[in-house]
Length: 110
Image (cartoon, rainbow, N blue to C red; front, side, top):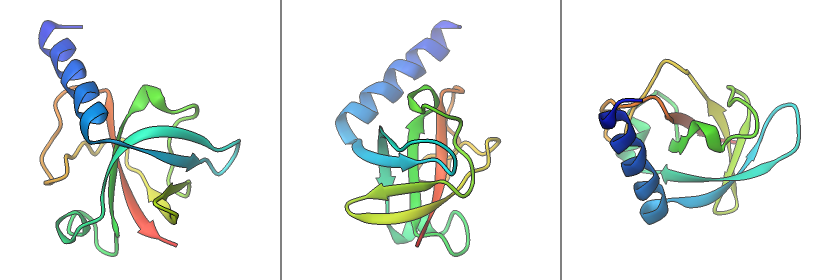
Protein backbone atom coordinates (compact mmCIF):
# COMPACT_ATOMS: atom_id res chain seq x y z
CA UNK A 1 0.00 0.00 0.00
CA UNK A 2 1.36 3.42 -0.93
CA UNK A 3 1.78 6.11 1.70
CA UNK A 4 -1.08 8.05 0.09
CA UNK A 5 -3.43 5.03 0.26
CA UNK A 6 -2.40 4.45 3.86
CA UNK A 7 -3.09 8.10 4.74
CA UNK A 8 -6.49 7.93 3.01
CA UNK A 9 -7.37 4.77 4.98
CA UNK A 10 -6.41 6.52 8.21
CA UNK A 11 -8.52 9.54 7.23
CA UNK A 12 -11.51 7.34 6.35
CA UNK A 13 -11.27 5.60 9.74
CA UNK A 14 -11.06 8.97 11.53
CA UNK A 15 -14.14 10.23 9.65
CA UNK A 16 -16.09 7.12 10.66
CA UNK A 17 -15.02 7.59 14.28
CA UNK A 18 -16.14 11.22 14.25
CA UNK A 19 -19.24 11.18 12.05
CA UNK A 20 -20.30 7.52 11.89
CA UNK A 21 -23.16 5.72 13.57
CA UNK A 22 -23.64 2.03 14.26
CA UNK A 23 -26.10 0.51 11.79
CA UNK A 24 -27.54 -2.97 11.65
CA UNK A 25 -26.63 -4.71 8.40
CA UNK A 26 -28.76 -7.70 7.46
CA UNK A 27 -27.46 -9.69 4.48
CA UNK A 28 -29.98 -11.56 2.34
CA UNK A 29 -28.19 -14.76 3.45
CA UNK A 30 -26.65 -14.98 6.90
CA UNK A 31 -26.96 -13.30 10.27
CA UNK A 32 -27.27 -9.55 10.91
CA UNK A 33 -24.24 -7.64 12.21
CA UNK A 34 -23.44 -4.05 13.14
CA UNK A 35 -21.02 -1.81 11.26
CA UNK A 36 -20.00 1.81 11.64
CA UNK A 37 -21.31 3.89 8.73
CA UNK A 38 -21.84 7.50 7.78
CA UNK A 39 -25.52 7.69 6.86
CA UNK A 40 -26.82 10.61 4.82
CA UNK A 41 -30.60 10.83 4.53
CA UNK A 42 -30.85 14.20 2.82
CA UNK A 43 -32.20 15.70 -0.38
CA UNK A 44 -28.64 15.98 -1.70
CA UNK A 45 -27.96 12.27 -1.11
CA UNK A 46 -31.26 11.36 -2.77
CA UNK A 47 -29.98 12.86 -6.03
CA UNK A 48 -27.29 10.16 -6.36
CA UNK A 49 -29.81 7.61 -7.63
CA UNK A 50 -33.45 8.16 -8.56
CA UNK A 51 -35.82 6.84 -5.91
CA UNK A 52 -33.19 6.60 -3.19
CA UNK A 53 -33.69 7.76 0.39
CA UNK A 54 -29.98 8.44 0.91
CA UNK A 55 -26.62 6.73 1.25
CA UNK A 56 -24.51 4.90 3.79
CA UNK A 57 -20.72 4.89 3.52
CA UNK A 58 -18.62 2.27 5.30
CA UNK A 59 -15.23 0.58 5.22
CA UNK A 60 -15.40 -2.63 3.19
CA UNK A 61 -13.47 -4.79 5.68
CA UNK A 62 -16.03 -4.01 8.42
CA UNK A 63 -18.55 -6.26 6.64
CA UNK A 64 -18.83 -9.90 7.71
CA UNK A 65 -20.04 -10.74 4.19
CA UNK A 66 -19.64 -8.85 0.92
CA UNK A 67 -22.41 -6.22 0.62
CA UNK A 68 -25.01 -6.93 -2.08
CA UNK A 69 -28.06 -5.27 -3.53
CA UNK A 70 -31.15 -6.50 -1.70
CA UNK A 71 -29.51 -6.55 1.74
CA UNK A 72 -31.06 -4.37 4.46
CA UNK A 73 -29.61 -1.53 6.56
CA UNK A 74 -31.44 -0.46 9.71
CA UNK A 75 -30.65 3.07 10.88
CA UNK A 76 -32.53 5.01 13.56
CA UNK A 77 -35.23 2.33 13.62
CA UNK A 78 -35.92 2.56 9.86
CA UNK A 79 -35.19 -0.24 7.39
CA UNK A 80 -33.64 0.50 4.00
CA UNK A 81 -33.09 -1.85 1.08
CA UNK A 82 -29.51 -1.67 -0.24
CA UNK A 83 -28.61 -0.92 -3.84
CA UNK A 84 -24.89 -1.63 -4.21
CA UNK A 85 -22.63 -1.21 -7.20
CA UNK A 86 -19.06 -2.21 -6.23
CA UNK A 87 -17.64 -0.03 -9.00
CA UNK A 88 -19.23 3.15 -7.58
CA UNK A 89 -17.18 5.07 -5.05
CA UNK A 90 -18.99 8.25 -4.01
CA UNK A 91 -18.79 10.52 -1.04
CA UNK A 92 -21.89 12.25 0.32
CA UNK A 93 -21.59 14.97 -2.33
CA UNK A 94 -21.35 12.54 -5.23
CA UNK A 95 -17.57 12.93 -5.49
CA UNK A 96 -15.12 10.06 -5.78
CA UNK A 97 -13.47 8.72 -2.65
CA UNK A 98 -9.77 7.97 -3.12
CA UNK A 99 -8.54 4.57 -2.06
CA UNK A 100 -10.32 1.27 -2.31
CA UNK A 101 -11.39 0.56 1.25
CA UNK A 102 -14.73 2.38 1.27
CA UNK A 103 -18.13 1.42 -0.12
CA UNK A 104 -21.19 3.55 -0.81
CA UNK A 105 -24.54 1.87 -0.33
CA UNK A 106 -27.58 3.56 -1.88
CA UNK A 107 -30.57 3.19 0.45
CA UNK A 108 -34.25 2.83 -0.42
CA UNK A 109 -36.77 3.02 2.42
CA UNK A 110 -38.76 -0.18 2.80
